[in-house]
Amino acid sequence: MNANLRKELMAYYEIDNRVLGAQDWETGSRMGVVLEHLLKITQQAVGAGKQLLISDITFRAASGRITIKLVANSQKTAEGFTRRLNDLEIDGKKPYVAQLGPWQQTKTIDDMFTGRADMSVEIVELAAFVAGQKKRDKEREKRIKNLKRGIG
Image (tube, rainbow, N blue to C red; front, side, top):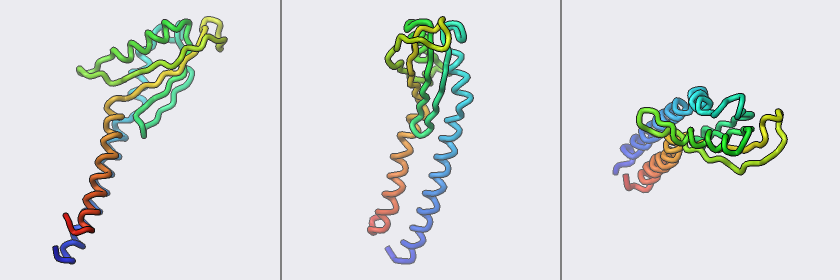
């Protein structure tokens, strides 16, 4: 491949990689709209305010995960919340995979709540997108490396 053509192609690939990266960022940002997920998740709470209370939520867009700290009147109530999240279907798809951490029988902010647990909730589409993004980034890098070596 002639040097001028390789130089032009390299410039094109670098710009194209940035455009594709920006498109990935935009798509990931749209998928990670936290308020929409928080609404859907909290709607699945069993006896919200009476049997179960969410005390803290942490969202990690880079992994597509939400961590929920909750207190409940029983382990059974916390497990019911987890089950409802895992059973939820929207447009024929299950958007979340929830896992309840160890139940800790303990005093809480109110006597009606007898224990606490942490729950990890994976936003399935976002987690898959994030995993694919790493692969797409490597493919874009590989394209430029191959061109530098004279392959592409």
